[in-house]
Length: 237
Image 1 (cartoon, rainbow, N blue to C red):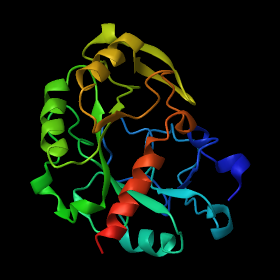
Image 2: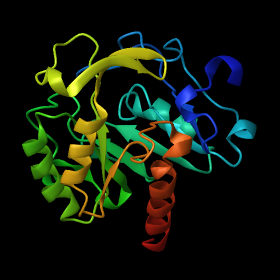
Image 3: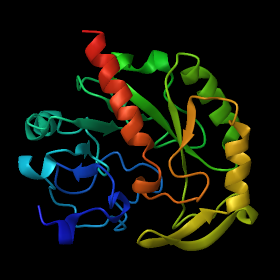
């Protein structure tokens, strides 16, 4: 893996590196997918760190694409990594490793995966991920109650829009995020969302709420929740 060409700039200076076993676009085609839209940081070709490159790192499997698609390929490609977690938007837990489940990928504003809809062992969950904006907050409230009631960490990812008119334009501004430009939440709108869940110790934001940076090196919530999930899974064996 050539770090100069293929290292995810969002992951710079963190302890996480990407792995994507599949080739081509993801067939799930979730709403506002940056992976399928040409906004990903590299061509849609397999990205497979060597075992040497993986030493001392946590391997994030499928920051683009989905770990439940071409499942056998995904598992065969990643079985040699000591520390790894999987990402999926499908309610199927079968990785025997910490897993991030995006619960409102395709129907972002209307539905989410409830715990009783998930097949597999919920103990694999590193956290559930909810894609939040300023008009799906009632749905988010319901999801927080549903998942945090079971003690599952809940991470908010604020939506960014590139080809769709936002429903609350006053809450958004067009600006560059990492590599590309989007309609992004204004800082004050994000603060209102974070304040809404400030009393819930299981709700986190994908980013640093103080600096408003979404670089992983300034957040590290994935690293923290990965080690918690791995320890929990090992102690339950």
